[in-house]
Length: 249
Image (tube, rainbow, N blue to C red; front, side, top):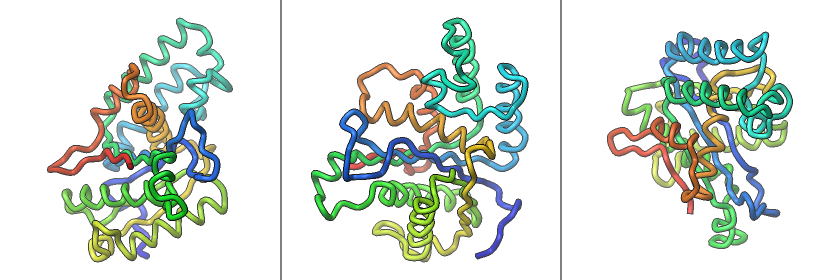
C-alpha cells in the first residue's frame, strides 16, 4: 500500500469508549462506542496541536500530560488538582471552550451490546467490527464528498492481539467493502492504519477520547443533562445527507 506520509489533506483519529466483549456485559455501561475525529492537516498543525499545548501549559509546567477523559472525570493522576472546585470549574470551562472552538469533524458509531446480543444471539458480530464497519461507511461518503484519495487513520494501541484483530477487520473492509458500500469505492482510497501508544501524546487521539465519553453517556441516558455532549454534538458530521451518528440496534 502506498505510504502517504505527510501528503494527505486530512487525517482521521480513532478512540473508543467501553469494551467490545459480549461474554460479560456491564449492565451499567452496556455499550461500545467508536469515536473518530477527522481534521484538515493544516488545521491540525496550526490550530489543534498548539491549542492543546497552550491548555496544558496553563495548568502544568510541561505539555506532556495526556488529556484522558476518565482521568479528568475521576480527578486522578495529573488531574488531582480538579478535586478543588474552583480549579475544576476553571479547567472545565477552558476545556469546553477548546472543544467548541477547534475545527474538527466527528463521527460516532455505537453498539448497544445487550440489545445486539439479544437480537442476534450466537450470530452477533463483534461490536468493534460492527462499529468499525459503520465508521468506514461514514468516512467513505465524507472523503468522496471532498474528492479525497488519501486518509491516514491513527488509532491508540490497545494490545497486540486487539490491534491485530482491528487491523485485520479494517483491511478486510477496505478490500471487500460492506453490504452498503461496494469494495471498488474503498479501493479508490489510500487509507493506512497506524497505531500509537498513549504516552506518544497524540493530540488527535486525545481529541477523539474527549468526544467519546459524552457521546456514550448521551446514547445510554439521553434524558440526562450532558453539557459536554451539547458542545461536541455540533461537530458531528451532517453533510449532504451523510450523518456522522450511528447507533445500533
